[in-house]
Length: 239
Image (cartoon, rainbow, N blue to C red; front, side, top):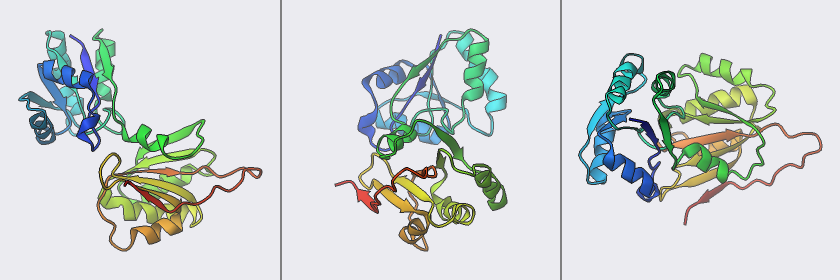
């Protein structure tokens, strides 16, 4: 049987597509990042499903077991905690094993914080670097940041909500206060908010104790000498 890679909502439950729901209902087993989150999601759909955990801690060992279930004819759906699997989430090893062993992999597209942020960024992007989650330690994180210099293309960064202050400080240190940045908080949720400005302004906006909100950050590419400076809009909240 094929492996279905299913996108789930990133905040608004109405973003689950009818096709995704049908696939999830018919699956014999869900391959999930965290069983607790998976069970909560299944309950919200009125479903009871067997869960098999596959995350950064066990993927190397468990991917082969999941593959065996597929080869035995089970119908499996791979989901992440939210959004589209494999974008800064586990699952790549499993998908590669499927390709190597002739198991069909079928995408079931839907919500993704990356494409949602890009779609409302206002930036004309012919190319960008998806940096994903940066290292946890400040020295390692700053080393990655400096490797981007000079910023000839936009860089997309994600991180856990509680590390945003430390991330911004490292960006400020390496890229400077006038570096253009756009941050997309709590996308698709009632408290959704978009910040547009520079790193110095973002530091002020966040304050000493930033609220813990999921976010996607886009660092703007350095403008060419002939490119006009974009207008600055501080924030936009959903109404």
